[in-house]
Length: 239
Image (cartoon, rainbow, N blue to C red; front, side, top):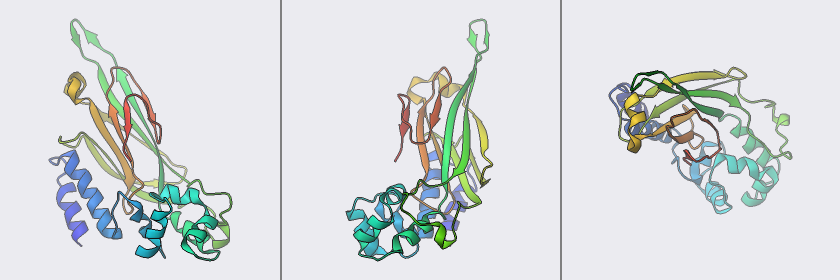
């Protein structure tokens, strides 16, 4: 109840909220729902059967994210936790309930000069699609009846800059094999002020934490393309 009230108070007036406050509201409201923090290994407590004790064992083994848990594989998970098969397979099956978004952000620029004035326009194209987690080959997931990823997933996209009003915010329902795309215009004033050229793009699921795509982009005079997990000169990936 507290999480819903918090997020509705801020996001219900998102046009007047700053990017920082809107992002914080999304983080805190989801953290309250899953009873865990979003910036540490305890995010594995979102998975059924994982309590504080097992989460601590995984953290001590180097698990700091859902992705690192997936890459560990079921047999190593069982060894770390002192469990017998098929505990590791069942635990990884729970990961499949957590959406994994592939995100591509591309800056689009259209030049239009009229005399000394530069009337060029710039925008961000944000493409989102649902993909499967890259499970270890030893994971026997199909035997538990989960042979594919979830069919649909609810999520959000949030665009803005630290301490300034939200540029764009929307919730979406994304189907498997049905990518969506958004075009977000970049204010001309932001493109002209060299000290204010950084824009944050956050894409994440509505009900889970620790799996958001968060990238900070430096707006350039020409178009650029940024993908999930790829860092370039003008991109700062937020972990």
